[in-house]
Every structure is written in structure tokens, then in C-alpha cells.
Image (cartoon, rainbow, N blue to C red; front, side, top):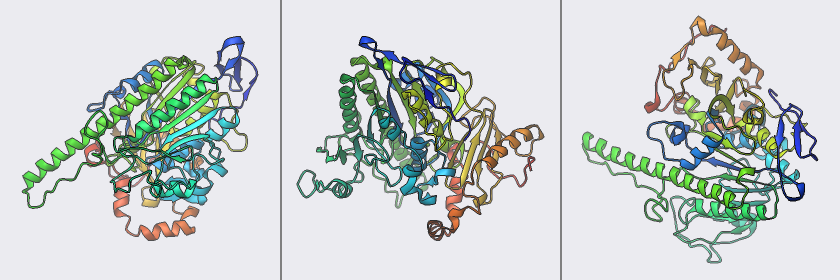
Amino acid sequence: MWGRVGNLSGMKTRILTLTAGLLLPLSVGLGGAVEKANIVLILADDVSADMFSCYGRPGSARTPNIDRIAMEGVQFRTCFAPAICGPSRALLMTGVYGNRSGAFHNSIWAFDSRGTLFTRQHSWARLMKEGGYKTAMAGKWHCGAKLPWEKEVGFEEFCAWEGVDKIKSHFGVDALGTGRRKDIKLPDNRYWYPCYVRNGDYVDVTEKDFGPDVCCEFLLDFIERKAKKKEPFIAYWPTVIPHGPYSTTPDAGKPMDIELPKPNVKGLSREAKTRVTSAHGKKQQERFVNLIEYMDKLVGNLIKKTEDLGIYDNTYFIFCSDNGTAVTAKDRGVERGVHVPFVVKGPGIKKRGVTDELTDFSDVAPTLLDMAGIPHPKDIAFDGKSQLPFLTGKADTHREWIYAYTGPVQVLRTRNHLLEARAPFYGTPQGRLYFTGDERFGKSYKRVDRDPEHAAARAMIEKVIVKLPSHLETDHSFWTSKHGKRWQESHRDLADLKKKQLHNHPDYVHEDESFATSSLAK
């Protein structure tokens, strides 16, 4: 679709030339052999851009290692991803919006896309594997029915968070029956006493083992093995941090303190309830910040490993998040729900620092392929555009608009305008239009739905939406399908879901969130 970059050519030379005119520099090793660049892609779980110190927001965590990636390369001030994890990961892995793939929501996989996501679209991992890269994934998958180790997806090595029953059914390893794992009930098993499968075998752990450490150690070993063999690699880490429950970490708190109990406020006065719940919320926020800071520490371990191996200068590092922070942003069709961090550095990338250029998750797949010098597939076009020309300074701009969604709700942004909460299915086909200027994070936005000065901007946005395939409009084929009818049956009362998906959390309402009854562009 829009902005697709042409295929690579000249792959046997020391410099690969893209048909779009970009020169992609590669390292030259001993004997004059070309060394393809390595890639480390890190995806955080359920956290908005405002929680990382490089974004300069009050109350953020201290993230010096993620900040270093931003400082040495490019920090996109505005990156959009779908507001909930399944569609976000599907878009990241395929470069195809839910309008075409069918991955609209964790509960809405149209066109049988839960099972066909990687047969109707291409996984960049498989394309990179076929192009000579070694591929590894560690952490949380949550991306349709196909699993990372299946051939359609393409990860050769993996350390995946899985339940004991799935490990038994997938690989025949009975961790409980053989006594390799204690049969104890936990509120969650992604953090303390974690449950992971590594290259087909259960990972033996104790109660003092922390899940993110298990994944990081796996990736450190993978990186070292491939670097010593001079094999180009991509290490994909969709970490479980900081998804709830907000556990303690090895640096803050005691092991096995996985979930902070909710306070008992029964019988308390209103004032006492407020005091107790406020103290609980403060402790939860402290744990949330501690998790983010621990993740940053592990990112630093990966950076140091590449430095120790002498491959840092030939390795791309990308850090981003799948959707906005849980409770306050996740699954909301508003800017905060889809606004995620995105920082990148690597060989040939110009040190730009913070940029106002726009990007979204459809750009990830074509960017990774260009970083690896691997041709784009010819049969299925990406909806996104490779960032590499902009990152390397071969282009001064990247995109005019970016797009995201959750369920039937759409969000679209240009440099100065934001359309959020557009959902014909919910009766809000006009959404809410804001003039944002150079501001972000909801600061000083102005509602301009009926402002004649902004009618042209509205018309341009609606023109983009019209060109996109239907996004669960009222006549979308999903609603008459078996799965669509089942979804509607289980959501007879849409009031609560509609209220959540069309509005900000009360703590983040900055402007009027009512809906206009007409549009100047109509």
C-alpha cells in the first residue's frame, strides 16, 4: 500500500543499494568479508511513552540505557501502535494493519486471522531466517494461533513464557509429573518462579528465579554464540515487563511477592477508604516504576554484551512498547492508548536525537528487512514504510500520517492534527478532532471539529480513512460471520466497553470528550 519501499539489489557487493536510492553501509570484516548488521528488538508490555525518562514526563522511571539508545540514534516523539497487545504484535510482526489482516482486537480476529495471520501475511522472522539470519525470540508471544517456533513464523531458537499444560501438549515435557516443577498455585508465573520453555524443554527454576532474567540470560547466550560464529542475528525480546501483576524485582522487594494484596476497606469511613486506597495506589505505582527500571537494567546487560563481543557498532538496538499503560491507557481508542515509545540506534543511523517525524508499527517489518539487506516480499505489500532512509539521513522526512486502533475504534494522526475515537460501529463516525500543534501527551490540544480553519485537515484525514479497507464499520463482514455473531452475543450490553474505548481514563482527560454531530468535511 502506501509508502512501500522497493526491493534490495546488489546483495553480493559490500554496499547494498535499495531501489529507493538508499545506500545501506555494512561492516567489512577480516579478509574483506561483508558482515551483515545484527538486530536486537525489545518490546515492553503495557507501558506508555511517558514512563521513560528520555520522554521527559513527570513521574517517569529512570531508564538510562533506553535513554542511551535514544541519545545515540533517533527517538520518535510520536509512535503509534494498536491499543491492545494481540493486534499490536500482529502488526509489528507482519507490517499489515488489522484492516487487511483481520487482527482488530484480542477478542476480534476477523477472516479466521487468529490461525492464518502468518499464512496470509509474511513474518519478518521467517523472511530473515530464509535470508541467512539466525533468529531468536524470548518472552511473551501472544500473536495469534501460530507459535514462534513454527515454520510459518520462523524463530529458530526460543525461550517462551508458557503454561505447564501447554509445554506438555506442545513438547511432551511433563514438568509437574516428573517433579521438575512444584505444584504450587501462583497469582502469575511470568515473574517469580516463572514457567518458560527453552528450545522445546522446560526451564528448571527455583522460587528465587525471576522470569525476565531467564529470558535475558537466554538472549545473552544466543548473542554470544552467534557473534563468535560471525553469524548475523536478530534477537527479539517481547518482555513481560511491566505487565501486571506489579511484582517485586530482584532489586526491589522480596522474592515471590508477586501481587500486592488489595486493601480491605470494609467498614471504613469515606476518608479512611480514600487514605487506604491512595496508599495502595502509591505502592502499586512504585512497583510499576521498579519493574520498568529493572527492565532498563537488563537492556543495559544486552548492550554491554555486544560491547564485550566487539559487535556493538554493528548492531541495531530498537526499543518500543506494545500499547499504552494498563488501566489508564490500554484498550482505549484515544491517543494515550496508542502512543508508545520508539527509540533506535545502529550502524549508519544518524544521531538525530528527538524527532517530530511520525512512525507506527506498520513500519517495523520493512525497516527490519532493510536493516538486514533482505528483499521485501512481492506478493503482499506492507502498509508501512521503512524508517531506514530517514534514520540514515538519506531522507529528511518519513510519513505524513500514522494509524492505530483497538476493536472498532480508529485513531489517526498527522503532524499537527489528531483524530481519535472514530467508530461508526459505536455511533461515533466523526470521532474527535484536535489541533495539537507541536504539543504531545494531550497538553494544550484544541477541539476543532467545526472550526473552518481546520476543515482541510479534516478532509485530508477522512481521505486517508476512505482509502483504508473497512475497519469494522457497521456493514463489515465480521459482524455476520460465526465469530462476529458470537462476539455480539457475548457483548449484548456495549455501554461499558464503548465508554472505555472511546474515552480517556478520568486522570487523563484534558479537553472536552463529547462528540460532534456534524463534520465540516462532509
